[in-house]
Every structure is written in structure tokens, then in C-alpha cells.
Length: 394
Image (cartoon, rainbow, N blue to C red; front, side):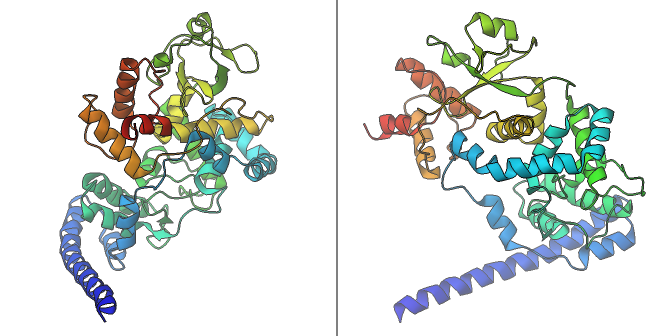
């Protein structure tokens, strides 16, 4: 009986908490309606937005979810840039060649980059998300962790509807409010969206001309440099100072060459003034030289692994160019809890990571480099399993 009672008690507690949330949520909605009116949203759009408003507990779970494993770069990219995705991307480049050529000519953003974003964001339109975006954004705005951001996104949803780009019912997307073929947030659509097919609305959900032109416009206005690469794999000399391999440490390509950095295939590197070296899987993994266009990809998504995957997939569309190095890299990953413990141990030893959060952010990388320097280890800043073992399982 005891084993039966416990789950029932937990279920009742959960339902009561949800009921309280929903009651508070209703009061919050009432206040937000007044804010929408003050922002000059039409009465019709406000009514349609709120009549089917729902508090979505699943959205909060997804927002707070922590991945059990921090995926190593090579595993991450192999899962996303696989033969099927490459083959389908090449096929779609041919199928939409005329459209993509027009967009590339107008905005100066390569069609291969646009299709790479398309492939990684929604698997070429197959997985655009089926959450009711207004309710998702209401839930996130109400929950409060990033309330101001999501309140503004919700207001922009209503502005999109007022502008007749879509209806409330048609606003479907990811749990976090990203929408369409290339997963634009509402504010991004309003700022960078383009009506490329000339039908009077910006339709990133079903119009490929609008989706591609909007993405290209975003990348161009964020600083894309025409006819420049985003990244290339490089080989480092045996005596390379790994502490130099940081995204914010920029040198000219000529200066990197003087330090013994060369293209992995011994081809000429582009003569650019701003380049960095990144080691996404530590000094034993592959090394990449990244350029200003890589920063533009990072503006879209702040993950280095994601940005490298976009550039890598784009490269595969025109030539078979596998990642060559990294076979000796540590292939296992730290769990979220192990990363948290690693951060705590570094703090304890005087290498400031900030409050542990289970993710190897910039501050944690700096702390790791400081520890590595103190122990005469390669200063790659990488939170590897061997570093964890050294620190917590001596």
C-alpha cells in the first residue's frame, strides 16, 4: 500500500501546484492584456491571442532541462552532418538553384550557407515545431526566468498578426518561440523578414523565397563578408602555445602562418586580417581557423559546435571535405553533474569559475587554462574526462 500511496500523493501535489500556477497564470494574462492594449495591439488580435491561451508545463520542463551529457564536438558534428543530410542538401541546392542564386546575388550570402542553416535548424523544413507559439511565449514570460525577453517576443507575435503576416492559429513553432523553415524568433522576423515572393506578407513558414531571403538579409546585416570563408581546418605545429587558441584572440592569417599554422590540406589560407584558432575538443582534437563570417554564424547561435557544424555542412555541399584530425581526442563526455563538480573543485582550488552551472562557458574555460598553466599542462581550456579524473579522482 505504501508504494501505491507515494505516487498518488506526489501526483496530487503536482496537480495542486499546476492548479495554483494556472490560477496565477490567468491573473497574469489579464495584466498582460492591458499591456498589449497600451502597445497599440488591435483588439481583434488581443482577443484571438488570449482566447486559446494555455499554460504549458512542458515548455518549462524543456526550458529548464539540462542535458545529461555535454556532447564532444566530433560526436556533435557527426550526428548533424551525416551522409543523408549532405546528400539531401546537395539535391535541394539543385532543386532550388534559381531561387538560391537570386538570393545569393542580392544579399552576398552563399546559398550553401543558407541551405546548411536550413538543414541544421529544421532538417530542410521537416521539423519546424508544432507548439502554439503564443502559449509557449506566455508560459515563458509568466515563468519569469527570462521574462522581459519573452514578453517582448509575445508582443511581437501580436504585431506580426496585426501586420497580416500570419494568423494566431498559424503561429506554430518550437517550444521557445522560434518559427518557420529557419527558426526565426518573432523579433527577428519583424527586424529582418523579407517578402521576397511579393504577396504582401512575410511568410517564413511555407514560402521558401521569404524564408531564404529573410535569412540572407539577417546574415548580411549582421556583417557577412561576401566571398570570404567562415572557417577551415588547420594543423598546428608541435610547439604551438594552446593558450592562444581562443575565439576572442584575433591575429592576421599571416601572423598565424608565422607561428607555424597551416591549412590541413596545405592549401593557401585566405589573406585576411582577423582570424582565430578554436579547439572544440581540446588540443588532441581537430583545430580550426575561423574568420569574421564565423562570428556572424555565432550571432545566429552562440554555440561554437553549432557554428562549426553550419560551416562544415556548407563545405560538404561543394566537395567531400571531411574533418581530418582529432582521432586521438578524448571521445567521452562529462555528465552535467560531473561538469558541475569540476567547476566546484576549480573554485575550491582558487581558479574562479563563478557559480557552478554544469556548462563549460567562457569563465570556466579561463579557469581551466589557469589550472593547466599552474600544472604545466597544455592550456586548451577543455573540460575533458582526463581533467575531471585528475581533479576529482586523484
